[in-house]
Length: 283
Ligand code: SF4
Image 1 (cartoon, rainbow, N blue to C red):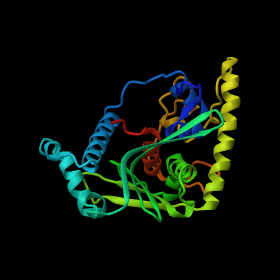
Image 2: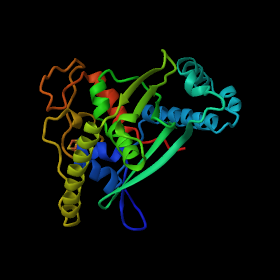
Image 3: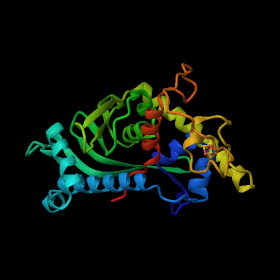
Image 4: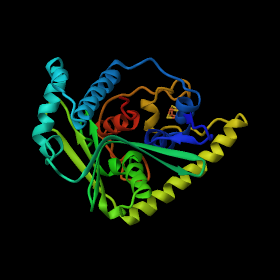
């Protein structure tokens, strides 16, 4: 967790996701900076994501990208697929008056917190503002959970709070770009009701964080999730928390209670964990 010079706590969407998912996980990761051995698969995924983001940024800045493509066949394949699926992004209209900015950084202060967002691409004109985000892993099948992810909520919330655009004129589109299969996109349109909801949820979460941090400074750890939650099965701190379980088989989970986290299959959970776990790609 980063402190700004004025001692504001800087919070990203990834940190909000973790905080909501398990406060103890947030504590180990951001307050104590504990790190488990690197998972090679995860590292490879992040590495590819970084290369793709860099390529998209170079392209947006009008810098040559051929040298990257010539030496990187994986990137070449990603780019070819994406250019075909989204020509309006890779080949924008010349002389368009729209504002376009890659790796667009914004902050919003809420109480003692500085909420930070980085849009992979922002395209804005006189009527609407579109946020784009690139992912180099499969599209999750549960759109609802992606909508509820703090990346979606925070990104649109911060833009509405820091610009003149009405929530109704803001959207966010995820592009899932992979070497195999066609790139796919999911778009979310924002509105005033969602904006108010997010404001409320955010305030509730930050109020809890205030209390947890005050307790932590007195030596009390942040809360764990209740025993038996699936989130512990995938957690790097399971041993530390004494929550290690043996997974017997991979089968779809059916739990119709929307209040629980068991709304998706194991595969969906893995995909969503990818989204939750993968921090903003650093360029
Ligand atoms: S093992 Fe479970 S309780 Fe412990 S940090 Fe991970 S998710 Fe939280």
